[in-house]
Image (cartoon, rainbow, N blue to C red; front, side, top):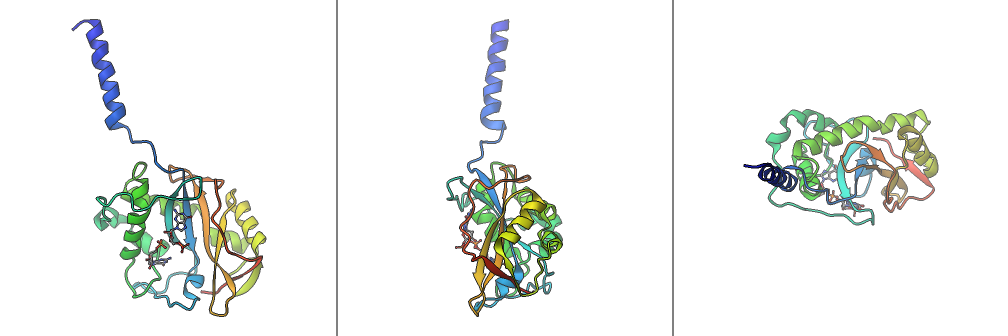
Length: 228
Ligand code: 5GP
Ligand code: 5GP
């Protein structure tokens, strides 16, 4: 084969690599990393149930890592062929039970919640992470954020007290360097309470970023931080 033939083969190899070996371009713009306050999930007219391993710690728990578009909409259930497979995350289960506890009824270990989140949201980020990486990244993000400590350091405690929404937002902004989205729900007396915190994450699933779009929050200016 002459020099020209060699170059041709090399070029074909490069094209082949580009098409089949490198990962496809991600098809979403960023992630919401969403944490739930268990006290607020449980303090509504709908019941909650503790997981079979017992009452979770009084800490924020992971709700999910959700691919999102800059415009505010999001993809969901992207790959019915990629079913949740608990054998792929067996090394993460004890950490998931602690950091991503389920509170829905009836009581269960948590696999239903993790399966739901993988199938609805995780399958939409398969271009950048597999199932193990999806759960591992979420666990690492929770460690990195340490939201409860950040709030406590600013005198914001889960003591059923009412706190200023901007004070909560700014405490988290100072703690992690980026503005979070705060979502409220209502307790049976119709008080608005801190329910979920949204932090934006880059498409690699590892770095916090400023949110391209904040979720609609539904919180008044004073909100309750319920006990758990
Ligand atoms: P809700 O109606 O309770 O706010 O949301 C129901 C579910 O829709 C969430 O648990 C989540 O799976 C999905 N969802 C709601 N808002 C968003 C959003 O802004 N981005 C993404 N990616 N999913 C969302
Ligand atoms: P999403 O709102 O993410 O679409 O759906 C959450 C689903 O996971 C619901 O079907 C809900 O019943 C189930 N689930 C199980 N445990 C929890 C939990 O602790 N919190 C929330 N928000 N949903 C849970």
